[in-house]
Length: 176
Image 1 (tube, one colour):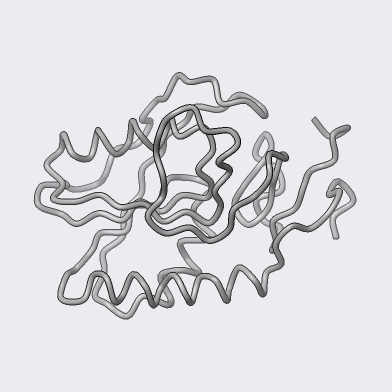
Image 2: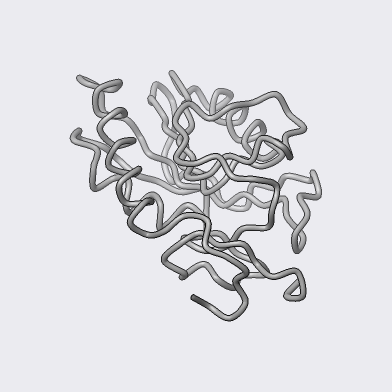
């Protein structure tokens, strides 16, 4: 365990097992369709890489870069720094998130994709932190519900650090 981590909340093995379950469910729900998985950079990358191995459909992938954090706080000013590479018109989109926290970013992105002509937008998130929600939004597929603690690892960061940890852990308070 990394020296800056207070405790491990979710192990790599648990993440892999839950990703398999989510992949099976998505495969069932989208049978006969070709969904577009859209990863929200940068935090979704490890989860998306694990999840898509278990989706038994023809899929396409793309990424968006969206930001709203300053250190440990969601500041509410959501910016789209990188749009999709192609049109979303007519696409069944599955947004891949590392964590649903306040819900602000997710709501902005969902609204944006519908404005671009998406047929449907669903959300799969590795983590859900409902205690922090300020927007009434829920992910359609959730890996794990976590308490209101500052979590890092498996894509989640603090000031761009800790993304490469193979588990989700709670960061020690003296690190931020």
